[in-house]
Length: 268
Image (cartoon, rainbow, N blue to C red; front, side, top):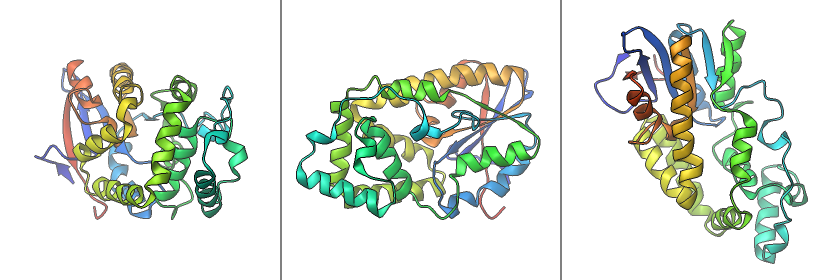
């Protein structure tokens, strides 16, 4: 382990203007793929230097995305063609995600997120980012959230159902291509290529990139700067949020923090 001369890494050291350690920021992936979970052990030395581990929202916000309270949306399943309904029902069945009726008054992007999580692999019982926070708390560290679950859900509810439905049906229409893209994302994550992860996420989000990526980057960078000023934090957020001139790393630099990539691997 040691500092990398390259700008490609999932893990970044964060120091205050006076050069004292503020903590680390890690780009995560919400996956149960065992290859990703192999990163947990080499991250431990960095996590144990910190007082608080913060994920996108606190692990103590119960229920997760699918169990949280949401204002019902108009039933969008009636707008699916017979072919689309059949394909979606088959996918839900295949991944044991329940019947289509259970999703008809939920934002379509929640269903798409559930499907993507399945495609990312399910070798471990819990996703990587969740396990990281659970292990940290078991080791005696405090846990927190950079955002809150209601904030994330509120963003979803500002996006017109038409726009969300288009995203979902695009995936249905091009399932093989989408699966290839998901596999590539896992490969880029394992290679710690945060630039490529940012680029592909930005492209996939299309007109939603401002609300789901760029606006959140700005908010997270502001909150992380305040958190780092108070205590040494290990912050774990989606890897796509790190890169770019509007990414979280750039946002921290603008607020006077120094960031450096840390080279690590599953073999450490």
